[in-house]
Figure 1 (cartoon, rainbow, N blue to C red):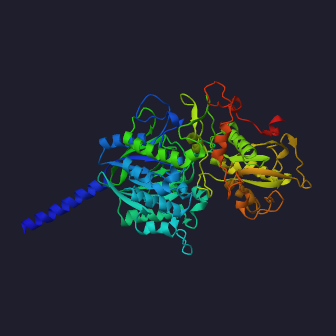
Figure 2: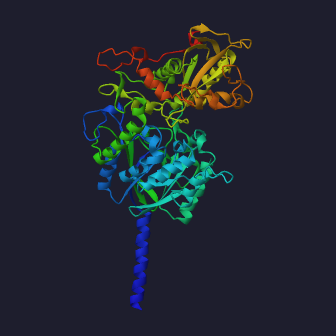
Figure 3: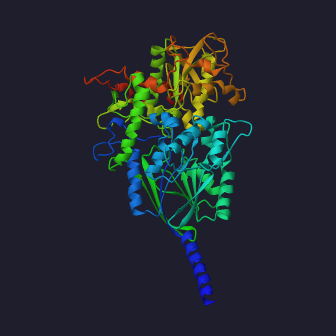
Length: 602
């Protein structure tokens, strides 16, 4: 009897110790977000050398991130958790081959990632393609746990069935349970409202209400799973208002959903140097493209964070990278070279041009000061008018599709990989990445109305800010809606903006942007009437008919892309220093002002 009693007490004591350990402990959380397939460091990428330190100014690179994880793992092997808050794909040449190669997810698991959330850019090519990417990754080895909670599938369509199957077999989950350092941790993923809006190709699956979903998941994790810590990988984001206060969807999430212990944020590419504390919930984010790794060391006592220490680790040339990871990535570079670039007469490391100054476009900065936006608009103008056998009056590019910048680095040499990273979004039907360039025709009045809307759109969302070429505009910012523009010049000649002028003017942009032009009437509830037309003045019914064919002697449409336009434009620059590499001209050192606000002159 005494032995039985002793045995029972031993079990009770063991249970008590286990509970105490699971309710208290130390956790070291390493996190990233918005990596966008930046497997290599940049830029210029030609200078990236992760197996040597002290010789370049490049940032990021998976070999360096792997080294950061390995260093931490040696110090805290039982307490380390590594996560990513989404948009790990899409942004470099590497993402093009993911559907067949399934390279990145197994690589991330090899680096040490435990859980990865799905963001909006994972759905850029649709749920079926994302399914193929994940399945290809599984064929190559183990992948991190994948999470996304606020999603529902369309019962009437089979286009998202394959992705739904990944949930059914547990490859993708609404939440994941991880045990680290004696802690039972619940981790779930969300896609935010803004991210949902810029993920049209996620259809027919639906991104559901993130607040409602988060409350449901937190309740399950607390009541049913009895976790000690809840982490949300929220691809939603934060921002700063005019008073310097933190705002945004993840701030709202922390306020409205009780029980989330840590929000690892993403989507807005925001560098948060110190956690944003909303009550007892910290929000953390690293910026983007793997330029930083966040390190959050916390101690938990009775399910509460009792101490926390946070810092961002700069992923730069001070870090000696994992050379085995670098070697594996070199194999993918060879694939990009052989399958994509060499057939186009290009090379991954072949110099295109060189610059001794930076060209930038900061979506959340002063966009009027961008010198990169005008260069890309000019590149589109040159490309269409010189390479397509057609002509265009006006070209435009939106700030939201400009993803990076040209950096001079040590030597200034820019390659095609640097160009593509800047304008990498979208796809057409030719197997070559990038949105097809498209052209529509508008009357002078319609062109005015489009530009009127584009003048005010950035106040709603900075990514709507547009850069133009081939056009000069005078406007008065003090005037009301649709009354700001005073004059428009095309080719140096002022055009008639009255309704009686039925002359058609051609406008070129990527196909995604021109779909917006066609939807203006509906978006403004009929207030603004714009009817995109073809050259003959017939209203466009099929957007594909607007795509520009860059080689009419070949069957089908030979698509042009923004990144290809920039490559061709850089090749036209003059070699001013005699080293057989074209130099960026001085005219782009400062922003080119093609829109003049006459209100400021009054």
